[in-house]
Length: 397
Image (cartoon, rainbow, N blue to C red):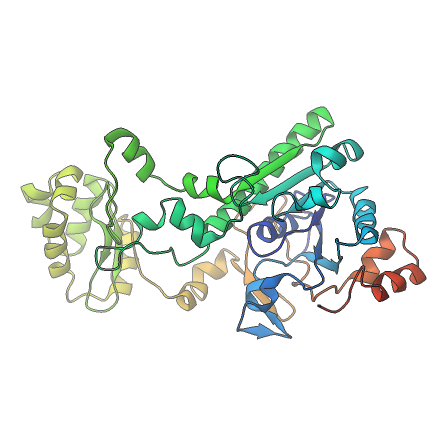
């Protein structure tokens, strides 16, 4: 796929590693931005987060770094910092997620150096807790923020206890928040000509995800309980057993509930006073589970889920990752994309006139060193010296 994305012409220098920052860079790249990923001499650590591996690079890295060109710079060396400064002369956005204070230590702090030198630059930092406050500048990791942000306290049930959500939701939302911040800053720059500092912190993103538990707590003062697959405010809104696989029901109003009961051949359930309103159904959710599962006991979960949603009842079978990725609608929505021997997830934001494009598969370590340095005015001898001296290493340390 090719074409002019909404961000075509935007130049991004991506110094970030691991997840939140690289994910933000990939989103910008998918929508047309030119992204140059600058890795440390030892490489982005996610290159080693496998198996599985392809040509020595973990699939984990591949999921976050397409549509980027890659070089490496040892920013501990002054000569490497000079290379970075030259690259920033034409850049619109700098992404980084170093430990807070690292850029300042290298003489590359935004307020101290970069803001005056590059007044149009948008400096986007992904951090764990922000730069100040009681936990300012401390490192942050997805699972730790799931724990400290209250997410684990509402995930799981009485048997399991608090559990981590099975994907890096805080990291990924933080990356998306960084993209939103960059877009806001670009709008502001278009009006004023001035760039600005943008911060997206994992701590803030973790708290942002606490819906509806935070508003419930603000109103009631009561802590949420571990409810497993159940919704704290709605019933039936959970996974229910069938003859085969579980089906998830997400019934939000009385009309949907009556339709559900009719579709499963048990209209009498909707007439039961215990289940007359959503509030009644929440209070009597265990009794409701018993009668619903009895009515669905001889039904195939996959067939039932698809039949219910077609009838206007929010429901769906619980699929495996493989089943989800091979679903016909996944193909229709272009949510699995291919570039040569790479397969990845598509872009969920779909501007009609400026769609995302998938132009480059994830890069090998420092794959584009000579190409990129030449674009920034370095001659062949200078490039050879930068590589030989370890300023711009071609092999991981």
